[in-house]
Image 1 (cartoon, one colour):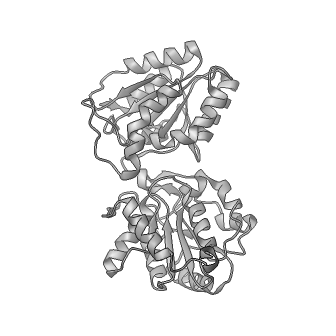
Image 2 (spheres, rainbow, N blue to C red; image 1 turned 180 degrees about the vertical axis):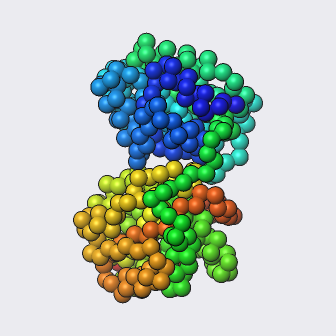
Image 3 (tube, rainbow, N blue to C red; image 1 turned 60 degrees about the vertical axis):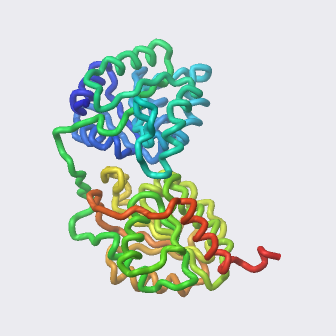
Length: 388
């Protein structure tokens, strides 16, 4: 295994002192170590494409390599700036990618058990890097030296191109902090499930729910189980971080007027594809709820930087007819009730506690099975003219 502090010191000795990226659960101990290191520049961003762009700008202005960390699911977001800007046929920008390998293939060629959304991504990760002409090395718990990293950096510098370190689970250790603190969000705040419970007090057969990837959907599922509810009207978007709200918007446009689509979203997801909030043309049956806990909760609680941002003001600028903000379940109850009486889409920002250490259930059905059940129920709520 690799000690995170020693790894950072090695990178510093190679003149890699700038770090950026999007948090990943496999890299959370490495990222915690970055947060505690004062002798480097660490600048997390909203999505992986932006991280590549920042690394490009750093190299242009300093001639030094930036380290970009991400989960392999984020490679899709990074591809455009990698091939259209950083590639050796364009600007020839060296950088070091550090990529957590969810859905990894072990040394015997077997895929380790992981969440459904990571299976195919894990299968194609190394092939994608080969297609992108990005030299890579794979490291894991058995790795005990930085030799392969040094070789990658030599390639990056000599050929002026991106290189990638692919990281298996349990590769990094860290002797420092094991719990992420979010000082902007103090302990007086309520847990998210207290607000979700208020939503379920209004639950009706013509309500549909779309939840963002991460803890939100699993927490909603837990409450459903405790109530003995059916989950056919709940669609958990298990991957594609940042796209749940657009999926929900499209569904809401096709619902009957007396139906409601409630989108359960997070601040990290909104940050990743924030532009989508400006391109939702019809929100007539959509109640868009952002649970802002200031952190990427499901991958370790790392800060999003949105704890002190008024997202409800942004929603108003984006065109939502009404937007609200609250940190109290009792007030949220009244706000949600008012939203149900409105004829156009609404936005609610809920300030809640960041708790990355909670234990939550996972769906028993596969994503395909869950979607089929959701679509079967949806047909009874769809606008009739679509069937003509």
